[in-house]
Image (cartoon, rainbow, N blue to C red; front, side, top):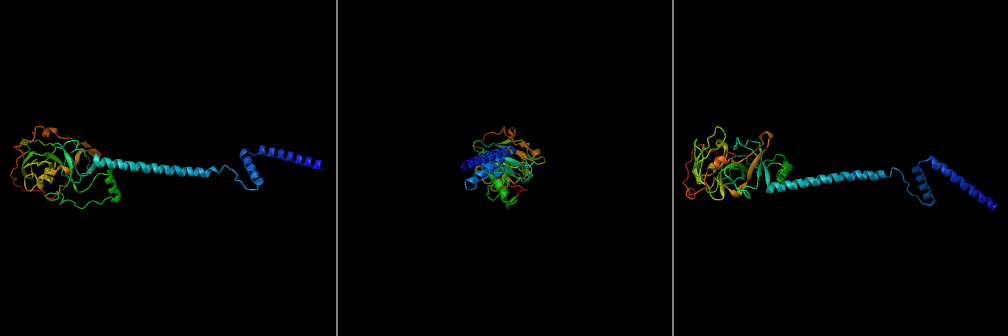
Length: 315
């Protein structure tokens, strides 16, 4: 009887093996592995996870999320580095400025944007004829007291941030842009009429003066530029409140601009596109001007004022 039972069990095992073989042939490999895993879990008295093709999907979704975060992180790093580089360039090398007035027409017109080199003065010396941006000297009174003294709030904090790091041009109301006519020690003279400006006794030809304006019109003066300062004038002589109108003593002491107030030399116009041009130094204008001599640098009596003082003009 025991032998019959053993043979019966052996036959049952063989039958189950054949049935399993038939099922393996009728199922794909993935389904068969899933069935085996389920059986193994049941025989062990516990439950085991059944591997399916859908399991990698959560990991796949995490991969997409990680890629998005990595992309955002890279963008943030690039933006921060760009802003840091722009701030370094603006602080020590170059800065963009916005032109608000017509005092430098036709060389510069309102709404022009210019790039200013902060290497002049510094590693590079100022020259007669350079177009420079400088802070309001504030002596004997603010040069821009009659202009828009209220700081611009256009654009809000984001605009101010972009200006601060140098990604937008400076539009602060305490900067001016003029042309250097006299360097320290130079004697600069004007007859206040239609005559030319004289530097160290030499009459200069100024092709950049706006058509219709006379180089000397507005106010007569005869000054010596103090050491550490420069004498500046606008190219639009009839509409520029420059050194001429901020020197009540007529000696050049107040109307001249301190070197340490100069931000830098304007190199070229970058906007609008049709105004793009290099702001070169008109060397021929000053090529015959000699270096200042001790005799010409002696103090002079104040020059008489003429009518037409343009007080309160901006830029």
